[in-house]
Length: 490
Image (cartoon, rainbow, N blue to C red; front, side):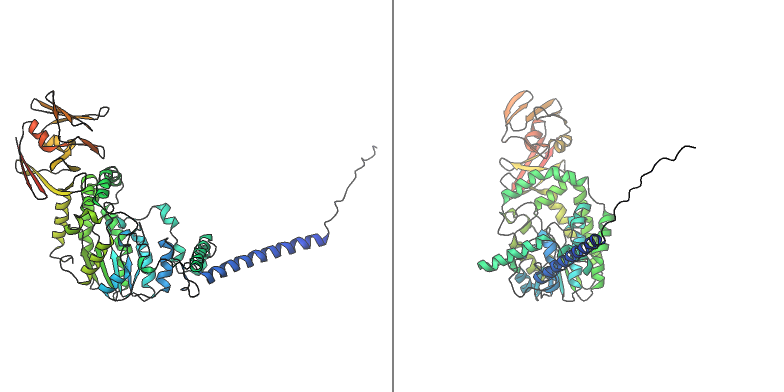
């Protein structure tokens, strides 16, 4: 019988009981410290409250944040007012004192740059729930009826709007609020006053207005509008957004007076839509009328339409781009609404006229490179020609796209992208014109043009009268004031 192998068993020494206890105690102290630090940070934020979300500051002068989506909840909850302004950047230039004068009461501006209808609903709802609001002035942009992208929606600070204390931790532990406090403290120590509510987020004095800026924006707009045209929300979606984010407030607050208005963009904004994003332009006309039909059911709602007011929209010096107008226009809007001006108050009798006027202006308005505005019409044998991108060059001469003009003249249009030359042929005649060159070839012979063809939004613009005449058409031109009318016969 073989002997069993010798097995040596070693015993791992046990951890001292004291070490385990000390580790547990340290972890407890760490957690307690962490909790205490978090509680202290939260209490400090509650006390400092840089956005005045919980209370209006009484011991230091706050510098208001220009991040409207973050600042507006505190203004809505803790300041005194009975009127509110809702809308996009188109409403940021309202002076509350001007609105007070025209509508009565005390006004708080709760505008948000680039905002959409769901964001309007959130801030309007928050203010209305305070019970302070008696009147709402709401700038209703057509494009604000679209909703935010998923990414933008995730970045919106819903926790400041939901009324739930337990979601406010995102405010308590946000380092940016301390930066805001230090800016306020620095301003108070240096004796500088923070921007007051009268001019909060007012951009009137930090931009330049002028027809040259509008024209420059118009010439660049075509590509953007074509892109937007492929991404337009349909009418049913827009109506659903209205029914979800505007209609409920009108029903829930019947004692609050709502003044909605359609903002007056420059006429060249309408021209850009009409020319390069016809779906948006037509949807706008449909929604303008449809929204009025919803508003007219409520005794507490009025609608004002300023979009076809040519005294404003044709004065391009009032604009910094295709849409954004000066503070002066905001004042005129407030005055018109305060006076209940029948020229702008939408009724059953004039809603169709407002739409017809806007469409007519979008079809006819045209600018030159200096930003001077005209209106034009072109008839072929008594039939009105519809055209998209257009421009005035030379001595009030209308230039149209080769794509629009060629078929109307019965001409074949060829485009050479390499040389940027457009060629039109019809009835044995031919014309070749090159972008940037004032020399044209007519039936093979060199001719000097009054101005050079140019590209706008990828479209070659060529002279209407010259092209038609060289292709054998008879052209009659009537130029009176700012109107330019063409009549063409074969």
